[in-house]
Structure formats: structure tokens, C-alpha cells
Length: 104
Image 1 (cartoon, helix red, strand yellow):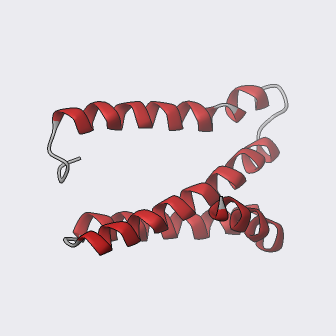
Image 2: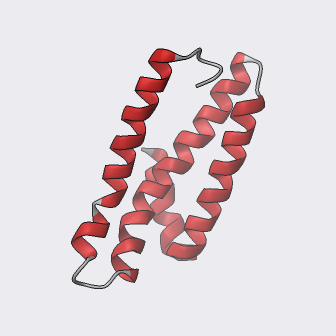
Image 3: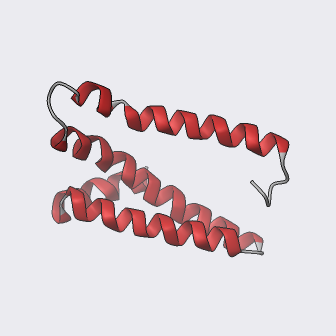
């Protein structure tokens, strides 16, 4: 919830495009840190960073997509974020059930 609130404020003060760029850089740093972390506190820290920045992205992506898309395709492209999120979660659950946690 805090990531979404901060994402809304960040979007308001910096603009949607700059906010998306910042959030994606933080997501990249979190993913790299998560993949190279070997201690439990580091895993928790990078998981928190990822959750925070992804929550911020979920605030900004639908509004930015709605602004840049043509009106006749806006309803389709506006639903892509939830479709991609649900598909990614489902894929990771299947992968997580079949491989070791470090590989997933």
C-alpha cells in the first residue's frame, strides 16, 4: 500500500514518464540484488524493494497507457497490465512448483 501511495505522489510531482523510468530502474536493481543475494535478510530487503516499486508501477502504468493510446484501442490496452500480471503470476507458480526455489 505504501508503494502505491508513494507511486501516486511520485507520478504527480515528477510526471508519469519519469516516474515509470525511476520505478523500472529500481525494479532492475531489485532483481539483480535478489538474484545475487545469499542471505535471508538480503532476500527480504530486495523482495521489499521489488514489491514497493511494482506497487508504484501499478499506479502509473494504467494512466500512462490510457494517455498515449488511441481512443479506439484504449480499452484493450488498458487491460494488458492485469492480463500480463495474472499470466506472469500463473507462470511463476507453475515454474515454482516444478523447479528448486533458487532456480525459480
